[in-house]
Image 1 (tube, rainbow, N blue to C red):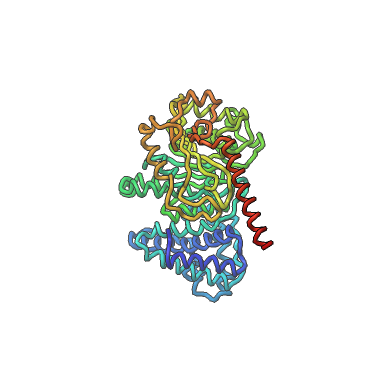
Image 2 (tube, helix red, strand yellow; image 1 turned 90 degrees about the vertical axis):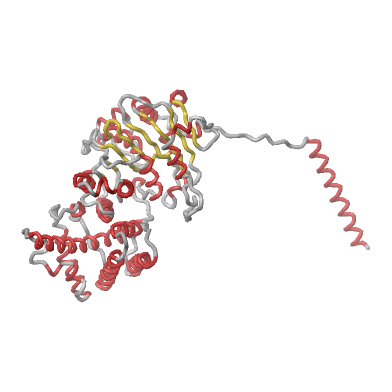
Length: 491
């Protein structure tokens, strides 16, 4: 988390855009992302030049004959010249970059649009970004500081997107990552990655828990930088932002791809050991654009059901998924709803349903959701399903989302990792196990309210005659009071 001078600088940067006429948060973060990428190109070019001199290796700069468009050259130019150079030369240049610079992000620059409206605003923004980088350099862990910086900027995206897209709260993402117990050899995918929040959090978790195993092993580090993380999305703006988000968190060349995950374009099958996702809820697709193998299992137009089917296809046997789903997936009575729940329960291993309060996604949406966790087996394996009724995620459930002292998340993680101790818990408690037979008997209904039992406390009330006597006594007191008041007035 960023604080102090760094946070103040970011807030100042956003205020510059706002007063300069660019008020859409998505446009702001996109323009900042472009400029960060341009600055990174300059840094990377300088590093490679130095390496080539030290190692006596040939190197041709991507800025050959274009030194004047480098960040280090631009920032010292007058505002008008800087603006003209960026608009007329630098942006057209970066839009022609392919993958030769070693950055995934470059693939999504071909439709980049320069939207900063005035030379004065560009000059202010360039100066402030340089100041931000200088502050990051002073931090003890530069990569973490830069990642936190970008994450803080992403938190300004407070407008829900189309098709039910909205940012998943970072603490919910972290909870899901911890529940899956990631390992250095995993291959991790989010088929609806957006800003890559799940993949970034997965990378942070692995760095915290397996630092030596990954970062002091050449092959493991290469896997971490290039092959471990895969994200798909159909929004190129989100892909740009998501790729930059991962790179600012120290993941060198993440596999962030423009792809319609639910179409025949996505042929991934049995490829990933872990899937983390919050797929779009409100989409409705035509059958002819959905992969036929998905429709064979769940014939539906609802994206939330199709994505669950997709996860099963994309996972390796033994691979595990944690996904956010709307409550309707858990209790919907249509053939498609029942079919996907039956598929997971009967042919794979359903492990947990964590019901979350409806305010978790405010201010974006008030939809009620849950986290579903299952393992692909292809041969069944569901015995008991663990249910948890989350009351608090550590924040108020209104639009303000103020931090609170209490949160159920640590308890959820602790209990899920020790399910053997849950066997004796009653269904009146906050978490409990439900045998598969009960779920089958209820037509594979997975809503917690179907199984949770309430404790009813017996209340005793006075007999109606006692209540009537009390009313008459009060009426007598009122009548006596009125007589006394009349006597005072007449007197």
